[in-house]
Amino acid sequence: MRVIREITGAEHVNLVSLCLGGTLSALALAYDAHIGDDSINCATFLNTHTSFSEPGVLGIFTDEATIEGLEKQMEKKGY
Image 1 (cartoon, rainbow, N blue to C red):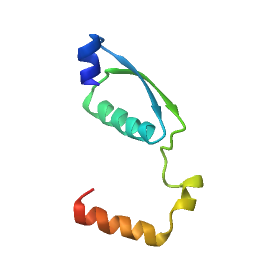
Image 2: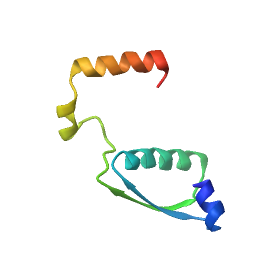
Image 3: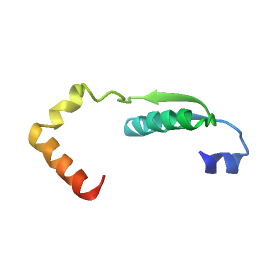
Image 4: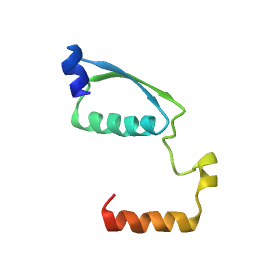
């Protein structure tokens, strides 16, 4: 956002996000709210999943063994 604002000279930007980009944008908006950054004027989310407590149709791509493997990998690599 900083670079976009520098290039355009705009104080605020409007954001459109899709899919995983929307999930990441929602995280960024929460962080910005926490630090008091209001440079994003509005955000539009298209096909975006933000609550992973119920995975919905994405659940067909995962099982317990896959999740355990991902958790081990994240512990090892830190991400």
